[in-house]
Length: 213
Image (tube, rainbow, N blue to C red):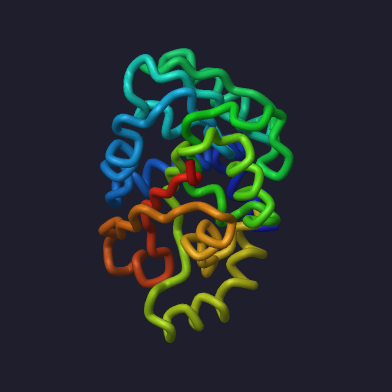
């Protein structure tokens, strides 16, 4: 598989993903991460933290529980958490079945994760459950293009992309709509400026929503 070849060439899955995230951040996402996480209420749950590439964007001292299902990514994330300004613990866990009691968190964060989960509906339902009433959902995700014809292009390209990428990433998920359908109150959707060559296929947005009080 092409993904396996790239991972071997780049020193493993975590190292390759860190390089991809670095390129994405250089394209304009780094500032969006900091903006998204500014003043985020703690305690925070981050879904699918990968190798922890975004840990440096949390405000100093913020209490964060970060879940990651893949062992290679968890090892890298724990190393990065040790040097982060926030207080981060990294645990094994799956967004579809969160190992926490109802109302455990003031905020749930997902950064470039809901594109890849098997069931966004289930993951968002679990996020809703573990949030306190009035708790915040903050997302940084690539989504379906707002232009219908480009959304159809995403649909055409998606099967090939998913096969090549190899980790379940989908191009055209309408994440803001899924958030509303999960019962959250949408409070803001903000497009992240990207180079034109990336934005037509991978439009990125920040989504802020809240579990009704």
